[in-house]
Length: 115
Image 1 (cartoon, one colour):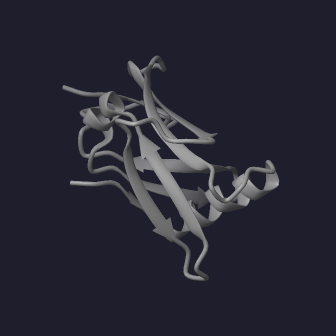
Image 2: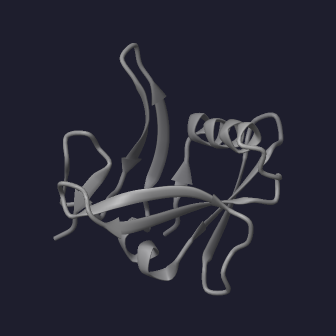
């Protein structure tokens, strides 16, 4: 399996990368940390380089811009197969993680539990 990102998520991450002044070579790191109301929470950040054992993925916008995504091996166990979306509604905007490994998720969608 692998991870998937929607065009909305890719475009949003590239826009944030530019706004924060990171170079195109910076990677988006997806990780899982202990915490949140369901026990595990997603962590999203930009890093300058990938680590040797990281899983690495590359996504491209329809206009040809590239987003490199890295995931450490431990986090990959919990998010392998995830689809990351970014949704904007009248009330808020947020990442949506459609994680096949999650047995349940909290109401806000930022933490989850595995069985």
